Image 1: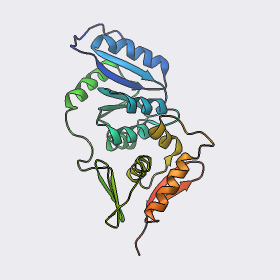
Image 2 (image 1 turned 120 degrees about the horizontal axis):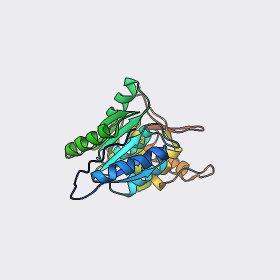
Image 3 (image 1 turned 30 degrees about the vertical axis):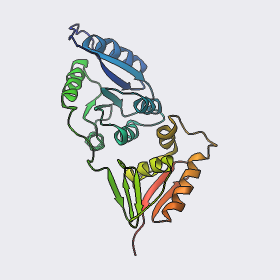
Image 4 (image 1 turned 180 degrees about the vertical axis):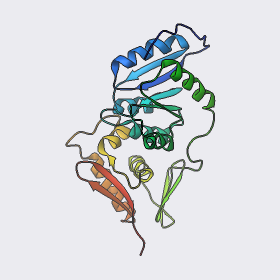
Length: 239
C-alpha cells in the first residue's frame, strides 16, 4: 500500500471502524491513513477478539480480513450477522470468485482483494456507509427445519407446533446451529459468541447445554458432536 495522499476530508464526527486483520503493520498504516479522513479505527488481530469486540461495542463499519487465526473471517461474519446489520467490508488475499461470492452471500457489503490502494478502500468505505440505511438479513427472523421452528426476534421455539422452553444460552446455541445447518460450528465459535472467549480443552458447559437441547427437542433435530471440531445441526429425514 502507498500512503502519499495527504488530503484531509473534514468530518463532523469520526466514524468508528473495527479493523480485524492479523497483519499488525498493515493495521498501523491503515490507522495512520484513515484517521485524518474522519475515521476512528480500532484494530484487533484475530477472529475471536474481533467477534468479541463486535458483540460488545457499537461500530459504524467493520473491515474484516478472511484469513484470521482462531476464527476465520467467514465465521466472524456469520456471527456478526446474527446480531447486527453493521456494514462489513471483507479483505482477502484469495482471488477465487467463489470466495468473493461466499462472503457476499453471508452478508458482506463489499469485498476487496489484497493488495489494495488506500484510496480505493476509502472510497468503498464511504460508499458502504452511504448505503448502510438499507435493511439487511431476513425480515421475519424465522428459521424452519423439519418440525422445528425458531423465531430469533421473539426468541421462541416450537416443535410440532408446540412451544419448547429453552434457557437463553440454549436458545442462542440452537439459533447458531440452525443458521449453520449442514456446516460444522466449531467449539471456539460457540464459546466466542456465548462467553467472548475461546473454548478451553476441559470445559464441559457447552456439552451440557447441547445435551439439554437434544432432550428438549426429542431427537427431531439432530445435533451431532463432531469429535475434535464442534457441532453439526442436521435435519432428520421424515419417513
